[in-house]
Length: 132
Image 1: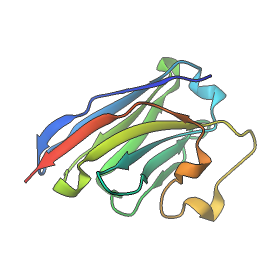
Image 2 (image 1 turned 90 degrees about the vertical axis):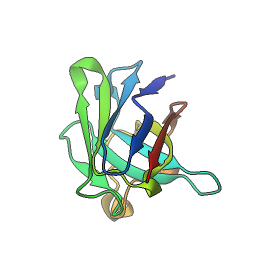
Image 3 (image 1 turned 30 degrees about the vertical axis):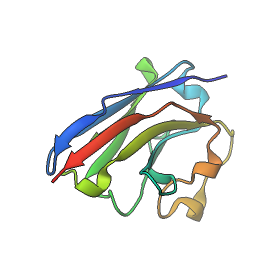
Image 4 (image 1 turned 120 degrees about the vertical axis):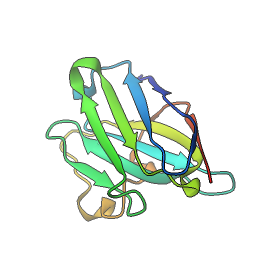
């Protein structure tokens, strides 16, 4: 069982920045991919960004490209999401997730961002609120 703990959420004005952290109880190298998802009230969970732990390849939703950056620190078993130029529509609960499927790659499936159905391990979430 892998435990994921998110931190770094909060309230910020539009145009501001936040950095989310996700600490994993297992070695991040034991995962293939880790990602960030978000869910606003009344909406479906949306894939924001994901990273291939080995080579560091990244995947982003169109809505965050150029504003958000996902990164990992394997020595610290931590994945980050740097969020810049935040907009009110970025307001949501943000979840960290991990995927362990050796040899699996998403290909075109993640062309518009990671898919929640592909991830097995989930954190409890951290709230991000962006005011106008």
